[in-house]
Image (cartoon, rainbow, N blue to C red; front, side, top):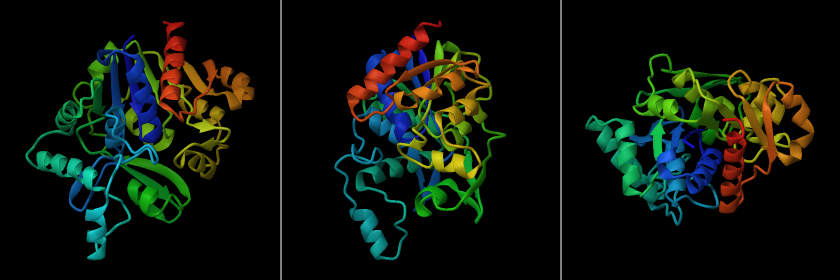
Amino acid sequence: MKIVAFAGGVGGAKFAHGLAHVLPPEDLTVIVNTGDDFEHYGLYICPDLDTVCYTLAGMANPDTGWGRVNETWDVIENAARLGGPAWFRLGDQDLGTHLERTRRMKEGQTLSQITEDFCKAWDIQSMILPMSDQPVRTMVETEEGDLAFQEYFVHRRCEPRVRGFRFEGVEVAEPAPGVKEAIQAADAVIICPSNPWVSINPILHVVKSIEKPVIAISPIIGGKTVKGPAAKMYHELGIEPSAVAVARHYCDLITGFVFDTVDRQLEGEIKSLNLRTLVTNTLMHSHDDRKQLASHILSFIGTDL
């Protein structure tokens, strides 16, 4: 079964890692959000793309879910001592990634070409693609004005109240080479348990149309998110955060919806949206949890293909 997964950061990376353990490498393509990419210290940084790559390479920090395992912070600490900004923590190993990516981009290489080379160097067997080689920038519209996503998410710690979102450059951005082909060849598309507003919506705006079965996994469990501001965003936009809210968010696109057992009582309401449902453990505390969730969802998809 050939699968395309749409992924954001930590939650998407964990689920993609589970898929990579239960599917042959040639049967998995992960398309990653690049709407939160930005420049810092003159370097081109791709937080979601790097989180997915580090996770599939077995190099991610297991405590945070982002960054590198056994990281050190000498460079950023010395830069901060000299007056440089330290609100976005760049580890020493991580800096190597950003330095080499930036060098290659200045030479004219595309983000997808660079990502392919990095995946080879890190021995990642499955295909990982940025959603686009053209820049798309997620802007968070807040009561305090419009903020670039990393300014909102990291520097301001998601404190400003959200009013909406826009994706600068999305009108002219094309899917990266291989994205359309992977979707066309796939048996199904899985939307990972990532933030629907700022991790998945940018991908959907770039891809535009999907003529394949699409399954979504709720990132909201018991009205809360495991990580990130998705539940807060729903609440501030006047929507009660829940698995039902996520199902409604995607209902015009998806045919099946996966949510956690703690929300089993919501199954009837979700089924009323004309969706097939899978109620299972979606918390991924361990590698076994990731593989089990991936296996359950592949079986769920297989019953309808």
